[in-house]
Amino acid sequence: MPQPKKPPRVTHALAARHEALWLRLTALHAQIAAVAARRPQAPVSAQTISVAEALLCDAQVFLAQGDGLPMAAPDHGGLLTQLGQALAGLDAWEATNAEWRGELNAFVWKVVGDPVLPVQRLRPKLVAPAAPHADPAYAAYKARMADLRDKLALRIDQFRNR
Image 1 (cartoon, rainbow, N blue to C red):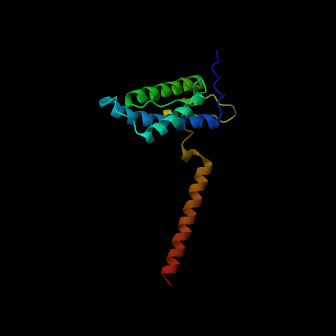
Image 2 (cartoon, rainbow, N blue to C red):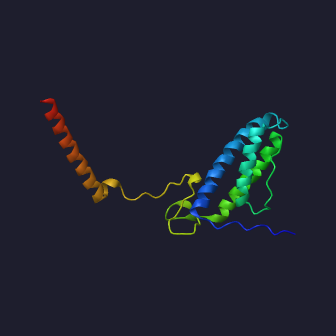
């Protein structure tokens, strides 16, 4: 009996790949669901089948299953089921490889490496640093911009008065 393959360690690239794949699968799932609600037995176009098979193949990395290339179902109802299963697998992988960080007030990936990577598809509202006007570097920037505006206005006036 073949052993189920072990999911890969989370890296920044793999987390970004997961989020992009999740978005594409969700969009295709919504399109197929609209047709499947009315006509589940309707055949799926060849272009849609090829896109679905490519997405299902990409999802295999995140699903601890066999290595076989999935064949997309020929009808909308079956394809909807397959896409739903792939999305459920992606959600399970995300739940395993993400954690809540209270100091950031967001879910973040358990990535290998230093920078913390929030789960972007959840639209995190990260804790913002202090207001920019309280930052001395920002105050210096504003002063430089005001000085440049004054110099530019002076040059414009000199040009007009020629």
